[in-house]
Image 1: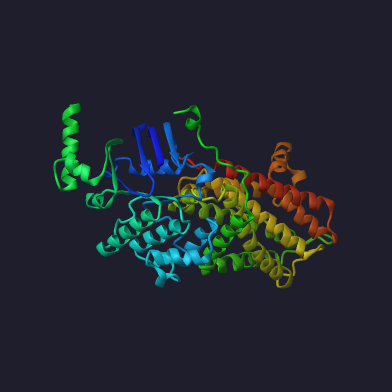
Image 2: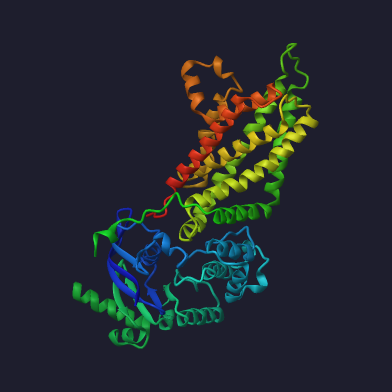
Length: 239
Length: 266
């Protein structure tokens, strides 16, 4: 079953076209990686998936409903690239607030805080935390709603390697439990951790693939090199 | 692709949930609780400024049979302080929600836009009630402010004024793209209402066209309500009508703020 269906999605910001008619689907219960360099349109695409992006044309359907429908708001979780939590509240107060918005109890808030490894920092103000910790508070505020679809914009930026591995383990555990995750990254070494890959460049979808398929198509075991080879081949054709 | 899927999703502005409104009000109050200096300023500043006015007019002689200048100005200020302070605090708080990304995030949660705005109104309305209690108590005991009517009514009017300030602050913040702009909405929205509210010049002595403007500005009715309480021992019909007008203006501003709060942005 496809959880997300995007058809001919065109987005303009100012006079610039940021997404040039994308079409793809995302199956249920997998980690789909959205990869591409900075400025390729990843964040714009994610905003379209959660229904906060003005769309020029095309359709985005999530769980059978148009993206951003009121019925989807308790089923789709969104974590922005910059941690969007309240700096002047403690970790616990932040997670409990979002728990309340999703109709969850403080027990579920504690569980979500533990999931991101911040149980010991519950009473600390977010402004006193490091950047990586703030990002995890932001993640906990989405996890607490137990969404069916989780859209994560660069969730591992600035995290130390150990935590990064832990978080990817958590993502796969969620996917195994049936959650559909869409995770963006501009680091190609994270591509190998995804079940599926969508490669974006300048608003075009240049690959809808799996890590294994990308390695084969790009004729390299190194995903970064494979990505480069694909781009070169593609531009060779269009030139 | 069907035509239906191309339709933009209309957000429901009428959707209301007391539970979500209360959650947001609680969150805003918790943010306030962590900010000790703001609490201190909210509670103490109006009393201190009122003290300055008291000292300013203390030794100025008044005509026999006329109320003292401080009794008139001080009472009016009890309504103007919460309006101005809450307008500023709210427009900055909302701008922070916008720039920190929390607003966009909240709009992806089940919370409706009106829930969010009413939550703000409720939280700052409660803060204003506390502020008004302190200021009215200090004014009537320390500064001998003479109020013919009930002090409770003065607090009620102050709270309604504060909610008006919150609502206009939320509305103004929708048009501010930066802190610089947000702060400058204060003189744009607050000062004309202050000039024309009847404190500096009684409304019936203004030029006709200024009277017309004064009559469409909500602060005019708040000031009239306070003057009614100052003059008569029992609550007057004019006062209740004034309070209803101010409350209605606040609700209208909240509805407009909800309508201008866009879920989808470019």
